[in-house]
Length: 457
Image (tube, rainbow, N blue to C red; front, side):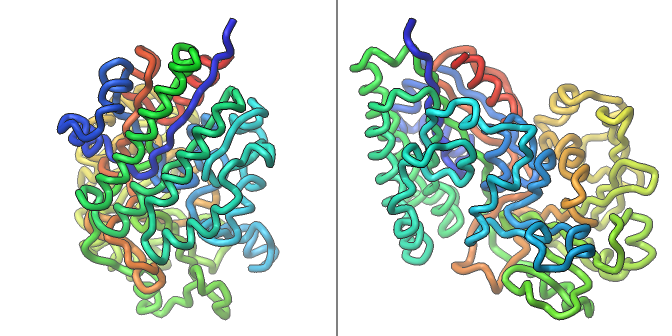
């Protein structure tokens, strides 16, 4: 019996609507033939925050960021900070720099990665390398230089082209699982626009060319029918025209703000940690306990209500004193109620923040997904729940309005596109396979983990 294998294309930042448009225009012929026509294609939902790194966890571990307490590309742990100080290794993190090496250790060992399940796994550009043998991390050598040129000189496509060559070379290793990240769609969308013909569209075309060459080689070797090719994204993006820098906002309200890269702030009383630039986690440091909506209104009403009134803020999420979560915007608040630990319902109180109407429930994880998938905020109820169960989620979680993001001065180069929020433009992702009926209906990205294991095993 031939060895079953999976080759996973993580096309970072790809939007399903843009992919479909380019395929229908004949600009992605290999994706259209091998995946859309001969395989299966659907939309899925990513996780909250919808940002690179945390959003890889559902694919690789079958679990959400909150399950690992990896609540963003940057996170702050108020409990560790208050007990052990800023120099404790677990007080705060930014995976955007040298601390990316800690990502593997930060993952919960109760949820092993697919590289731990399949120790012959091949990794390309993926920051999650837990379980990857050194010789199988095939883009490790040369990655730093390529990423430097990509970031500061916008030489994005060189990274994907080099990654494709390593991918083709890795086919001779006959590994059961390959996870290949193609980051240029995301980089081009941040730098230019998610639908820019001169840059972002070319990044989609590089992926399409790679798939064509890969498919031809697998067929030549007689391995195509035993290979499940999956192509998916970790998040979408929306165009950004304005920035509300939250660090400056809270400084204007006379808070002493701790944020990256200003982690040496003397006597901070508030932390601001941003992911994808459209998501932020805020912790108020006068107490070690998590704030609820009620205590925030009692102690920090002026700043919170001023924040909510800003056009850049779509809504904020807080814990409720009675359990569950409040979602608050400038018009009022709605309530997500938690029943029996793992069932949810949604109740507009003074306004319908999520624009779904009341969802009485109680709903389990699947019913919650189905009830909200086609709304403006897909899977919002469960995604709020999985995130806010972690103490690292902070006292106040912020989802930015489309067109805005939450970081300005320290974002170099300036972002022209952002993600991280609960809006559909960030939450919906394409899910494609070359084999029919494996991912043919809308799914959370966590479900893909089981599809991979069922195919290989």
